Amino acid sequence: MQLWEINKGAKKIFSEKREGALSPSSMESFGKFVSFSKSYISIIAASAR
Image (cartoon, rainbow, N blue to C red; front, side, top):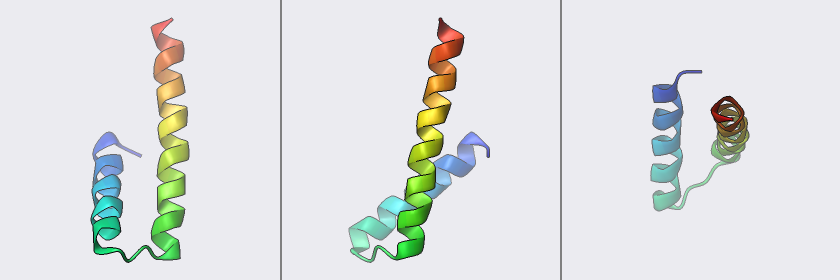
């Protein structure tokens, strides 16, 4: 997964949130996005040490 894909996914999720129509699939993709972000951040933090 590339960084621009993550950004695109986040924008899609946030635009759906503004519309107030959070479907289960968008919540699922948001969960995946959050878990991926956490692992991505931990990788950066580990490499920064």
